[in-house]
Image (cartoon, rainbow, N blue to C red; front, side):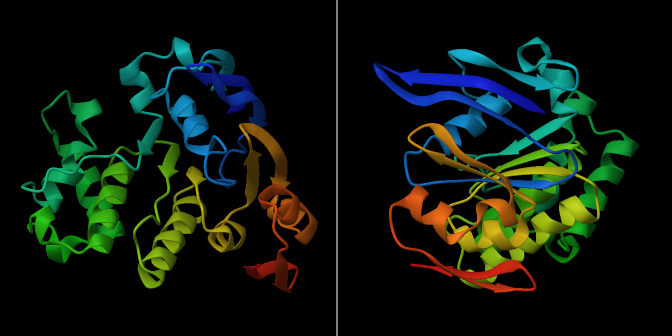
Amino acid sequence: MLIQQLTKHYGTKRVVDEVSFEIPKGKVLSLIGPNGAGKSTVMGMISRLVAKDAGLVHFEGKDLAQWNSRDLSKRLAILTQSNNIQMKLTVRELVSFGRFPYSQGRLQEEDRQKADEALAYMELEAIADQFIDELSGGQRQRAMIAMVIAQDTDYILLDEPTNNLDIYHASNMMKIVRRLCDELGKTVILVLHEINYAAFYSDYICAFVNGRVAQFGTVEDVITKENLSAIYGVDFEIQQVAGRPLSIYY
């Protein structure tokens, strides 16, 4: 997926300013940067949930705007911060919704199998018949990830998947993200505020400042004291183990 000069205005304010970068296939890419840097807006334009004012998103040989919604849903899944969960659905029902773009509202045997596989992968079989409002925050987040997995797309977009989770559940969520790439071969694009998670679990980083790309590259290239200090405007320190960032603080 190639992003070229994406631009977005809200009123007179340009919140995304000619952003360009490439999303490596089969890798985990994290979008980082200060609040208001344009990360979620860029994610919205990549997923077509936010209309772009200018620029192109090249996806599998053609501009994303040329894809019809049904075909796109077979290749790209997104979980946003504002995903509304129907609390009176069971976990199994919620996960089954991930297959609706394929089944046109009616689950076939293949769809049921994909939903069951997603439940098993996220270790949700034991609570599959519980209602969403009976679950903890971490369990709800895993159920939402299972719904996305059930779509069986090559690309998965996650907007702040660790938001409102404690350290234990957030770390588990990032381990799941890593598994989506390493075990299932997915290309995963994340918006993250927690730099340690981005550095430890990602392959590539795209850092934003004021609606522009400040740095793009591998974790080793981007996550340096000098880069982070320039991006966030504070003095960062980084501890490394075997050449990988282990702890980042300021």
